Image (tube, rainbow, N blue to C red; front, side, top):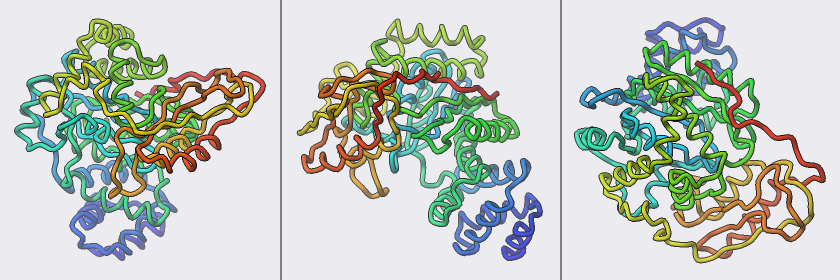
Length: 433
């Protein structure tokens, strides 16, 4: 097999064979193909695309380029949920215990945050002593004991995707739909779950800025999942404004707990119930409407909150922080953002607000950056709310007072106030599958 011939073939707009795609993916994983040759093929793919079969073959090859999770020892049907990323998106912390309490096992590998999007692993690690690294036997044992375990992604999981993503980021070849879909779905297939629900974010805080492109991505990922024999569906949800009110690691744990107490923000509760219901429907727990009622019942009776506390304890964390969230350390400093004029908040650029949180220490700009778990933002007002001049829109939190000036500038530039109340938008924009 000759990588130069494969590059030439795709540059000419021809389809690649399964063997050629495997050679490409495995060569990326083991380093046998040079970075500049991988980059050349990625660029050719961006110009000429991949057809449906090529996309499925690339996804499958990347999934098999490293470890594949074996969940055969899990007692019962397994489910997984993936979000394409957003600001204030703590849905896994609510959805996973709801679904586990309904009898669907969640053996989940989650990532860390990078850029303006937060990571579930970072949020959970704000709980003292919480562990996210396990040998396979212990991971499966926790899943079988309480129905849920959330671990960090293994360095051996999808090494081809890890290499290709870093090259796509460096060569401006990120935004090809097939490459995005295969990157996400390779990790989902390697994760081994029977049923997968995708939360495809759409809006200013998401990679896909409009409904049409978000739907096209969802359709491609669902097609890949079905081609690999998985039960899968995708929800297109709004990320034009942050989800919930709390942004930042321990702040988001607190809000997730409040949501499981049936005291969370309406938008977060709605999205979590919809995602849980769709995953339960895929697992044959009833119709979508019946599963929405089932999911809500696990919030109202407190059993989903107990499930989260049980998971935290089994993963080495102090579950008292779930029972009493006031135990989380508070940031040393706070700073109020006040409205400079009266009117209605017509738009909140979610990405810009997420970046303000990062600048406070709540996220990373590089993978090596440390996180201030107490840092973040609490929103008092959101898109559509009326605001009076001098009223507090949000409060910033950080352990470094010098960070407020830049974060405040970033936040203020992300909020638009107008005289008229904006039209409301639905949270659920579409369902695929």
